[in-house]
Image 1: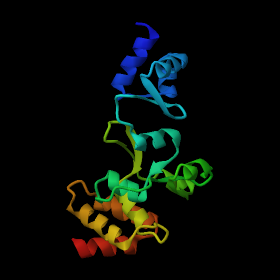
Image 2 (image 1 turned 60 degrees about the horizontal axis):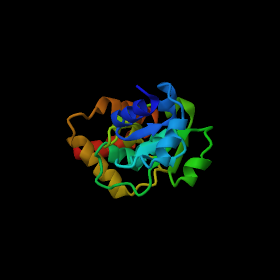
Image 3 (image 1 turned 90 degrees about the vertical axis):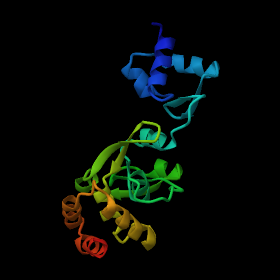
Length: 197
């Protein structure tokens, strides 16, 4: 199979999305991307990311691809876990403390940074609505994050997130309390849970 056909099959398999990394992994030259862009079959949406013109752009994945160290958190994580009905106006990501936040901020992302020993706690993989892998904090980690002083969320949104969480069959109260102790928000988390259970 010639490389152009291989690239088109790869794009189809990947929900209409191609990345330069994916091409490299499959031994396909980048020159084929330029050919398909000139033919009007692909569009470059950001550095290293191309989409089929007939597909829907997966913005949330595009940011994940561009900022690989970013983990979706706070209001965005609530949305991805269906703990809120508010669609985020801006995505929120948390990065390790030494990460340069200039480009995410220029891209209109709300950013948080945290020390390395806390950065990976509760990190999970989920799929976007279009089937692409995203990194997001677990429901339990997210609930701990949103009760902290600097979370920037309205109190009503925090209360509603806890209300939705306690209704869930997949809630893990033991993990929630463990994280709450680690992040020093145990009393706040316990207060929300006790009122709702």
